[in-house]
Image (cartoon, rainbow, N blue to C red; front, side, top):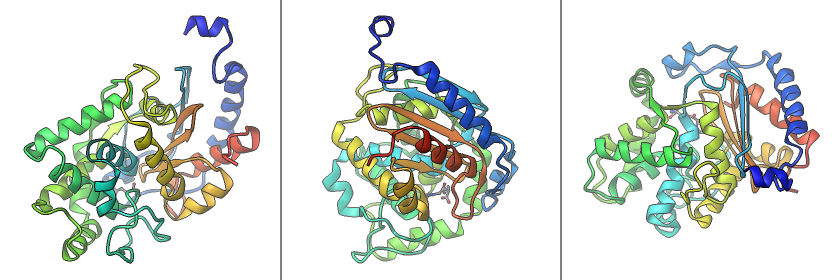
Length: 325
Ligand code: DON
């Protein structure tokens, strides 16, 4: 790191100037009081709408964090690109995409709908992520118990995050499972249409999905995961090759087209970066070959995206030339 600093070889050489902009964008978004904290999972409704954090990790390991960056939140849908990455890595894209499509659904994230092949549209919405969980559980090391699989996934996520350890929020898990009528409906609908691999244990698969959503991290940790994606699958903190470049390309392509719920097209147009949001108010944003960003603020707009997170991205694209086109 030091040699690179002396040679000014950093991907953002004037990092201190960049940070000044990030701070301005942070404070501007802080005063935004739009949006409502998600309440369809009762435990999530307890989050404070005041929380607001932004963390940045560049592909050469320069880091900056501001605000509530160490407060834990549940991953929710931010787990979807991660379980998808894991499935690509262990099963390969051909197997994974026999079961799940690559098309935006144009509908809500939990809409009861399959594509014209009777597959879930993509891995970034609930149906697709439940399906990916069934692949991970049933096809990848099927001898593992649910407990062992949970540990296995946790440690994979942690490798993406430079070996930082993740948590698990049991109250959110129980609360979600209790209020999961729609996800069960999706699960059964897919079973009716024989979407799962043979021998899938339906109950276990649903529990596994809820568990992935209830894993906990914070902005600091999630920015490292985003940076690993920005860096072609090599974690910039540990230098470990966690994902193959082709897996990363697939994950980022679908984050770009499907990662922001039914706002994905507008986000791709305006911001032009792969991103994934979750109902806990987190957002993973990837600037390929530059850096990973995580923002977290619980109040959501009507489509389910974090209001402050969106404002931050809009502002960033006005100031910096990060839009892909
Ligand atoms: O299954 C659910 O509804 C939540 N655990 C996650 C939803 C979420 O964050 C948005 N999904 N794309």
